[in-house]
Image (cartoon, rainbow, N blue to C red):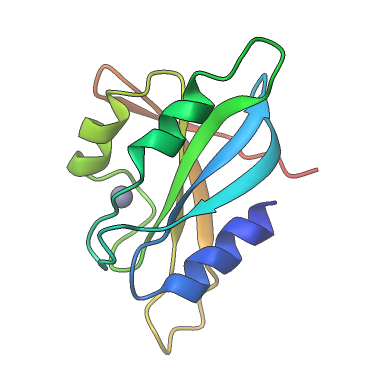
Length: 128
Ligand SMILES: [Zn+2]
């Protein structure tokens, strides 16, 4: 699933991509690529209706585990805009894929964070 997220980020570069990771108990069960409504290399805009549908999934149904997007011009670390956005989604992980500059030998790098009360804490990504 992480490959799917990274592929989406590579495909949409130089624009940022965005999407949702669905799951339960911090374990991903699926990836929903979304359209970056902003279609911009500097920010992303996500359809709020779809976000809300997953965020308020019924008990027993898999819900919103993470929101992912890419950084194509900066390191995969939450920007102030990300921190502000994340404030509205407590407990949801913030997965960022860093896309290296064109011509660089570096591989895309994915990192995940929990952002609570403006504090950024990296969480380990475990791929099974
Ligand atoms: Zn960002």
